[in-house]
Amino acid sequence: MSLIRCVSPVNGEVYAEREALSPEAALEAVARAKAAQPAWAALPLEERIARVQEGVRRLNDDKDRITEELAWQMGRPVRYGGEFGGVNERTAYMSGIAAQALAPMVAEESERFERRIERAPVGVVFVIAPWNYPYLTSINTVVPALIAGNVVMLKAASQTLLTGERLADAFADVLPEGVFQNVVLDHAGTEALIKARSFGFVNFTGSVAGGQAIERASAGTFTPLGLELGGKDPGYVMEDADLDWAVDVLMDGAMFNAGQCCCGIERIYVHRSKYDGFVDRAVAWTKQLRLGNPLELNTSIGPMANKRFADTVRAQTQEAVAAGATPLIGREVFPEDDGGTYLAPQILVNVDHSMRVMREESFGPVVGIMPVSGDEEALALMNDSPYGLTASLWTGDAERAARLGRLIDTGTVFMNRADYLDPALTWTGTKDTGRGTALSVLGFHSVTRARSYHFRKVKA
Image 1 (cartoon, rainbow, N blue to C red):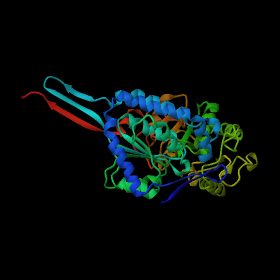
Image 2 (cartoon, rainbow, N blue to C red):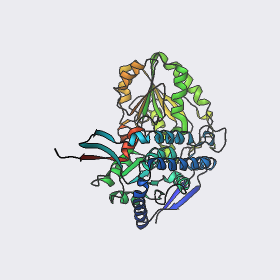
Image 3 (cartoon, rainbow, N blue to C red):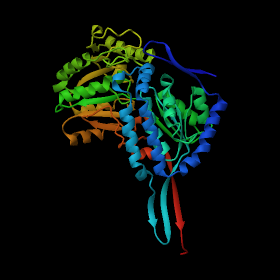
Image 4 (cartoon, one colour):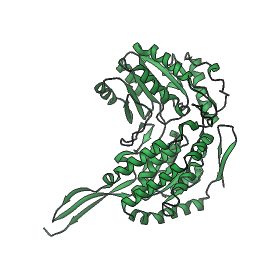
């Protein structure tokens, strides 16, 4: 058996470790899930919703412990209170639209015919959660999957090993046995279950390489996949933008969670008329951050989750500087940068798209800022990326933003907002960011399949 280990970025020590399930135990977990699913799906929709909501309420009861565990496991400061705001918002919204989203589509209801399309659960839904927002990303699929009548198996990331256990604890006395299971698996065990056609749907949030591994494992099984992979999300500040507002939101989008956000801002393009003012304000904004121990309430940016992640950001930054980029945040501003997981935030100017820091995912507290002449240049630069998750446009002209948004190859277009998931809108991506949808009515469609009914009641 392999040992799955979480090494805390706070102090470099092992924080938690669990043995991965053996192949036999993993298959037994799948069997339990499949056995539990029919009875769960047979419960009235209102009861399933109530039980799921109660489980999430119980998760909230454990908020203090969970928030501290997240700090130890992946470095997010405790001052932000975990992920409960988004967890509760998404649970409430998806619960509220469930009846509508799962309602039959009736083509005819007459004396002669009944013709309709119903949504049927896919069976066992497998959720492979990432470490950066382990509760939020899990809830995106877990809540609609359970409400729709599926059972769920959750595999937490090794860096946030305890998060699956906390969700299992919350649901333990609320859901029937086997309906929700936390499973500890290594990569080989995960791939083996997918290859064995264990699941009706697999949701994965993680790296492009991880998504490719999931696709290879599922090849020939026809298992539906939802993949949310890398990102290099841009912001574009137009000449009519509210500069203070744009700086506050875009820089928070770049630096929050030490830059470890799926839809974090990684590159910013600013109209030349606003460029100097934006950069000056961005530097002042960044210098007010406090890098340090995430367990201290005055810390606003904690360590990165793993030293190798910080090393990637450092390498991209050093390469850019060697190629002519200018770093605007001196090391003396953040002496807590230890060359390990504690990494000082950085702003780079004099950057271009020949540099990795402007092309490849950084997933850390660094952002490059470039001046642009207008929409045409900004559009070309925003689309010059293998990823497409979100794009953030800053202007007072909604029609202009809509016109430009239709030309950006991305999943979500924001105007005067960034780094946010609206549960009423579908969460999706293009290009190497992946495929599939979560949240909204379409999120229920991802965890169900269509079944048609054509009933003829009388002879012609």
